Each structure stands twice: as C-alpha cells, then as structure tokens.
Amino acid sequence: MVCDLDHRIAYDPAIAHLVAQTSVCNLHPLCRRHHNLKTSKHWDVVREKDGTLLWIPARTGHRYRHTPDPPAGAPAAVNRWADLFANTDPPF
Image (cartoon, rainbow, N blue to C red; front, top):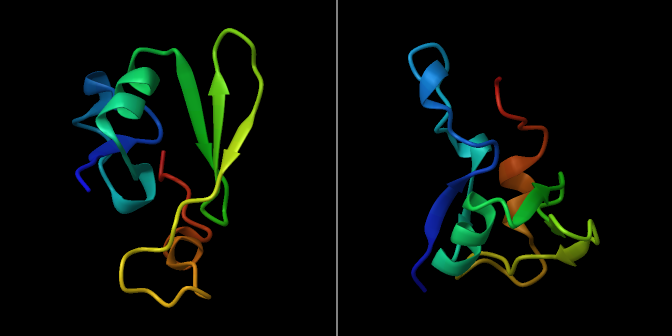
C-alpha cells in the first residue's frame, strides 16, 4: 500500500527554523485521498494515545473512530502503534 506521511499538527514554514516539526511523534500515514481532505481543511484528524484515529468533518463536527491495523508482520494481538506513540506528543 502506498501512503503519504502527514503532519499531525500542520507544518508551519514560518517557524521551520525554530522547531523540528517533522518527527515521528508528529507524523502519521494517510492515503493520498485522506491526506488531501485533511490538508484542505475538510476534515480534522486526532490521534489518541492508543493509536486510534478520530476523523472529524469540519461541517458537522461528528466523530468517526478508526483503529489502524497493526503493521505488516506484527503479531495480531500486538498493536505496535500504541507502543510507538505512547506519551509522544509533538515537542511544540
């Protein structure tokens, strides 16, 4: 599967010289369609500590919960997303 790496908190070129905005804790994989929806401000995405994504449409504010599949090759009982991103908020 092909995906884009999306900034959880939007990249801001005005502060690029002050803060490293592209880091593991501020990125998540999205397909191109969903990345474009988020970038164009039609949807917002919030990642919870367990790796679950909340998709929130700008017009209605409803919340749609999505739990990503574990990475390929990982045991089905283990959700590495939770391990990778536990307690890792962006540093800015």
